[in-house]
Picture 1 (cartoon, rainbow over the protein chains, first blue to last red):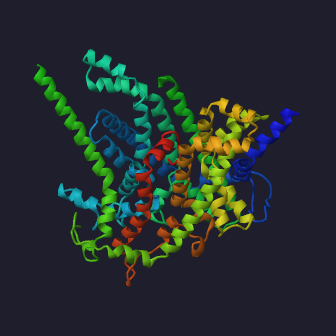
Picture 2 (spheres, each protein chain N blue to C red; picture 1 turned 90 degrees about the vertical axis):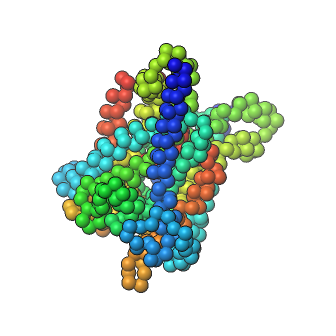
Length: 300
Length: 284
């Protein structure tokens, strides 16, 4: 009897959170998967004409999806490694100094809390062809002016702006995690290296990186997940059109999902579901590959 | 030999400082450019090349930009939504974390593992069905749509459970002997001890509401000002002059107005935010 009473109590405390989680997390997970197979699905009435893999075929055949996939891949493959290397160097640098450490740390953390939409407008203006700070500064060195994101911009220029913005806003989180990792490394390793007069770069590669490898793996996986889901950055830079210059379609995979969801066409929710499942699978594959590679390299 | 070593040491230190400060300047440029542009006159903002610094500061731009939009309404809406979803989140996570950390019931560990697994799922998969749910419940264009899905969080439950678990069990047993009820124990003993963690949850949840864009954009219509949140309001504000040309100084003033409150919160409560963030994966 005592056991029973306890059981009942536990569920009571859990109930508010659990009900919300069931409605907004667990049910959607299964329902989105199911919806992706429904033909002629109408979400207001819930009617549909049976199941098929038609929507997946449509997604894979869609030229829009191919462009979105390519954009997302380019963005991810450049921004993730670059931002990890920069964050790693900054963290190691920050960890090695005493004076100004707190102040610089605060500066590096600033982008973390900012509003994507607000700072997107700022980047837009920084990269403005005529009035922007970027063209002015590179002009001092005789470069440019570059179009970046106006009507004459090239694909590469526009993509560069997105990548720079993504790196800028993803640095703080990485630095925070690396820095807290560095602070747990035992000083003895460095003292031993000092006695042996090991060069600094070798200390970095042979001691710091291996001992930090669990954090590096964690950051790599979460960064890939984050980069694959890029949406707001592009939206805030390029507006609802998602284009710049010619042939400047810069929409990402998540953009493709929301575009399908937003259109009032019959069955569009099912198409959005199918593309979300595809995104989920792509992310899972990448995560699995990284886990496999890392398993051999990570030092715990 | 010794002199040489010292020289190298100082050279290397200076190089580290130089590179760090250089990187910090690069990171800070967007903030500088935003505030500088917000303070420029209509004339100065269209100079080519633009001035990198000016003493001719027009603080009135902030007032004009603020008045040209419905920022007062957006602020109120955002504060209301942030307050409700944060309060809801704290209540649900405190109760659930207590259940996971202290109470014993069938399936506790299984449920906990299942919840942890859901953190792997990209939000985009959930948003589609949640959008349909909100439409079916006819909650679109209401505050409820903006609050309900954010009244709990698996990560915060996980985070708070860790803190609760560190509180010695002896305290709980002693309270039991004294005949204190579970709920009273939670409220009088556990919550006060876990205050720093709860504060972290409050801050992160409130920042989440402040920065929310995608979900509000989906479940509220663009023309409906009465439920518009600050990010969506900023995006839909035009900041144009009579001829329909963009007034960049107003636009940057608008961005500054949206950015500054959250920066102040960050600078004053930095340690709580960093504590929470370095343990999490929220925000890509």
